Structure formats: C-alpha cells, structure tokens
Amino acid sequence: PREAVDRLRLARAEAAAYGSRSVRVFSADTAEGVSRERAFADAVSGLTSVGEGFPPLALENHGTLFDSPSEIDRFLHAVPGLRTTLDAGNYRLRGHDPVPAIRLLAPAIVNVHLKDFDDRGPTALGEGDHDVCGTVLALRDAGYDGPWTIELEMPENADALVRRSIAFLRATVGSGER
Image (cartoon, rainbow, N blue to C red; front, side):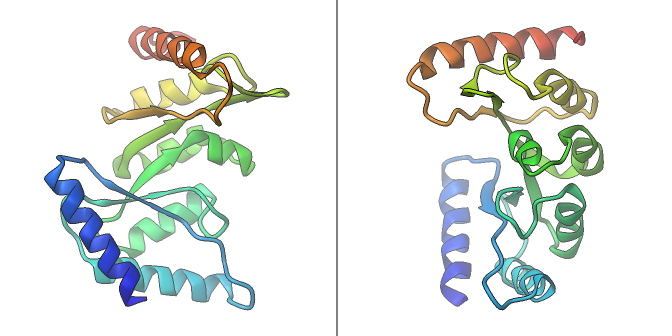
C-alpha cells in the first residue's frame, strides 16, 4: 500500500539524519487466501517502489513469508539495493542453521541479531543450546564488520546476561577459537 511506502521513505530519511547504517524491515506472514508467490510479488513491488538509497533497507528473517536463507536470498536478488538483518536465533527457531545462511548472504548482511536459549528460556550468548560461537566465527570469517545486537526476550536478569554476552562476543570475535 502507498501508506507503507511513504512510511518507509520517511523512516529512511529520519535514519539518515541520525546517521543510521540501515532501516530494518520485517519479512511478513502470508495473509489467509494469498499465495506465497502473490505475497512475494507484492512485497517485491512495495519495497522496489521505495527505491534504492541510503541508508539501505535491511530485511530481517522474521515472519513466515521469508524465513529460510534461500527465500531471503531470492528476495534480496529481486529488490535492488535491499540488504539483510541476519537474526541467527530466528533462523534456529525456524529450523535453519545460521552458518550456511551467513555464507550465502554475507555480502548483503548489514546488521546481526544474536540470541541464545536453553530449555528454561533466554540465556547469555554461548550458554544456551544454539551454536552461537560457530555463528559468530562464521560472521567474522565472512568479513562482517557491522553492528551486533544482543537480543534477550526480557528475562529478569537481563543486565547480567548482557554483561556475560558481551564478554563472550569479545572473547570469541577476538580469538578465532571455539
């Protein structure tokens, strides 16, 4: 819709004024009665009409329409100038290993979201069930030098988890060891 395109153009202008490196956009869920191909075509049309510019739009793998690395890659190739916000935890939650996603999407990654979980919920990075170390090293090996976001799903002890997560990132990114 025209209103969404106008909002994205405004968001891009505001992001540029603040010196942002990108404007994150979410992949969508398909509406009932709309085929995936129709939803894909509509999304391509909408984002293409926003146009290329700085900062670039960065599609996050969040939602059901574009949740696999291959679907994100297909969409990136369909929309000129589109980049991606890689959410490693979202890939894991949807059954995809983020390491091959990093290899496939590396040139287009402008933001990274990291999270870790165990059977009780959110944990500090490196303390849960996800191979966050492998993900971080794959990003480093791919030459990623953009921002990292530690995502926590609002645990009570968030401050302590963030401190441990930062220590994990510093040790992992700087060391090259698992």
